[in-house]
Length: 276
Image (cartoon, rainbow, N blue to C red; front, side):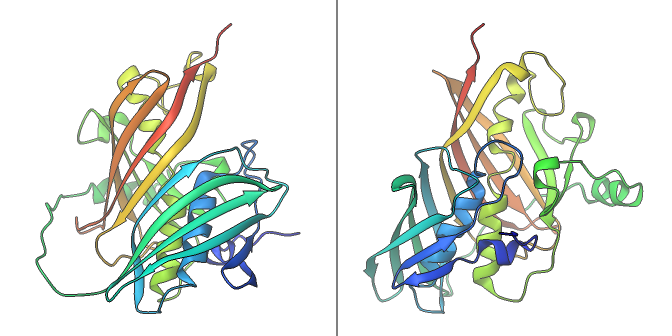
């Protein structure tokens, strides 16, 4: 079955029954299902079970087993709670009868209230120069879906950060649910790699030791703070918080070109060095 190169279509799942969906997998040449795919499809499946005026504001997932790229994924949605303003959902993703991901997500009606964030000045000039000079990053496993520009070390504003610009390759309709599921897909990029930077092993530094690393996401969280567009360039700042005991933990903040914080992420992942 041909898988769409449109991220919105890829995140949409086929409805099999009430609160039961089937999503397709795509082989990104990594040997396993990309975690962001399962995360985005699970959130989109849950979205179908809530009122149209409620949108995800937070989601927390555990990746349990490596996904099979040659098999579809079944998503079972449990309607945990529908309150006056919030809805809570639990989603279980399965392949071959086994759970590969469990996700809890909360949805909320938009409401007015206190509003605060710390703005930044993203390196827009670096992005524009990279576009003009045709220096966008080559990310082979995401080439069908994402445009990415990883900032080289000399352009990174904070030495401890792993920073990049990213957007969906294809336009996305003016539909909040579509932008949210696509952002969930994108949010799995970069976080785990940021845990390598304190060890001078991050993706931009060729290293024999880096080739010996075993890396996989264990859990992932994302918070949606403000409206955004996933088909317009946005800036991601990932910072490692801790590595140890075979694991790495990092946090990320996502900003518009204007420096508005619109989402935050965190992730813990497996971080092992292969034994000889």
